[in-house]
Length: 93
Image (cartoon, rainbow, N blue to C red; front, side, top):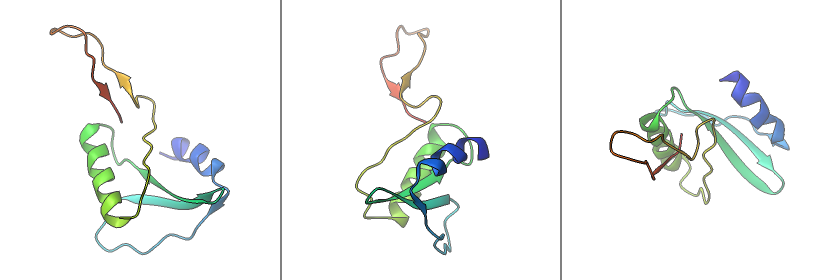
């Protein structure tokens, strides 16, 4: 994850000290871009289930989050045509 984390941390104007966590398994980087505080969460593994779990835990830990952006190599790219015809759903990872 270090290769993916470095560019994200590079766009932060400031990196904040981490907050203590008791139950959460997520790894966060807290920071600021312009006047906006941001939380960067890392996926422990690839896949939709991992992304959903991390997003749910993030919203529980930071209930005042107003916007979410999912980024990654496959974020928002529709799947290939399968046996049932073209896939028109978008999958975010």
